[in-house]
Amino acid sequence: SVWGDGKLYFPKGTYKITKNIISKKAINYQGDGVEMSQIYSYNSASIVHDSKFVGSNEDANQFCMNDMRIYVAENHKGSVISLNFIDGAAVSDVNMRNVEILGAHVSISIQHGLKLYNARIVRLEQCKFVGDQDKIQTWDDVNSKIGLLLLGDKNPCEIYVSDCFFMYWKTAVYCGGNLEGVNFRDMAMLAVRDGFIYNSNWTKSPDTRNIHAEPWISIFGCHINASRYCVHLTNVIQFNIANNNIYGQNYSHTAEKEFNAITIANNLPQEFWGAYHLKGTIHDNYISLIPQHITPSSANGIVIKNGAANESTIINSNQFQNLQRGIWLQNGTTENLIGPVQIFTACKYPIVDEGINKNLFK
Image 1 (cartoon, rainbow, N blue to C red):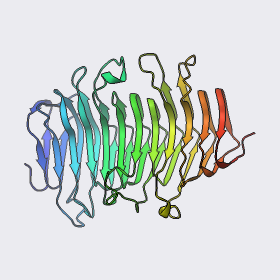
Image 2 (cartoon, rainbow, N blue to C red; image 1 turned 45 degrees about the vertical axis):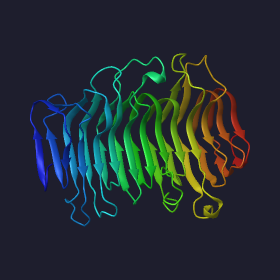
Image 3 (cartoon, rainbow, N blue to C red; image 1 turned 30 degrees about the horizontal axis):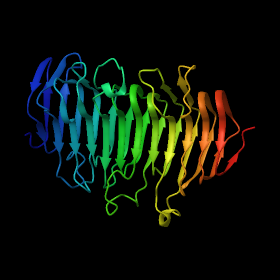
Image 4 (spheres, one colour; image 1 turned 135 degrees about the vertical axis):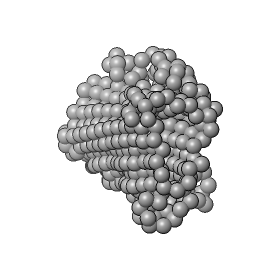
């Protein structure tokens, strides 16, 4: 274990780890570049930061990693990088730039690429997460589960992820619990089953779920290619999904029974309706399914599911192509607004409104 403030420098070379590298306080992993400093993980060995510090020292919980590549050489049963912070820590900085986590060979299984628990003030820039390194035949062939896992139950906040790349995962990014201020910018996701999944009630126990949280997310300027759910939000009360290229691929070997580009859902109990109506904006996105000659009846652009709190979403200036339904507002939805500027191409049902909503599109 590494105790106290310090720096682990990995100069040009290849390194093999078979046991966890564990840090307790501020630590900086520094390499000479992803082509220069490369670590091979065997025996499910991980890089673990397990902070127990509670205080206001900005450096006390800081984890930094720059300019390194980690190859997963064998099936990994846990998180390749696992960063855990104690409940209520005043500052939990995470700064990672130009870091790659890659499966070293075809058909490898990785449980999680990077996991963050209760982290605050997070910056991930120019990082790369690639799972199986496989040519997909069916989605059963993809063994790697989650590229980036963000969890927390004690107000993790201010998470900024930009210019990162994901490929060959069941789920590229999964957010669970109470995460306030999750921001994704200029991301690329290719050949994943699910893109962004955010479920603010990730815990199973009704006694501990974060019903009083204020989870919100922004997804801007991303390229999202997923076969089932590109963006799926559950009980996320504020959201902005804008300026993205969102599309699914429905070739015969990767075809799904359901494709939803953007899904908004909630299951909040009735007693919380007043304070926790879902409010958001979905605008300036290109949403489609390819190839054009295959459009399953379950292919949808924007879906707002039935639920008492699903209201006050503004949908405007989007382009839809090759879908069964462009916009689908399900039974029980209210007060959502479909703006006057939309373009629908090869959509069987451009707008399906089963609720009590306002449609300005003519």
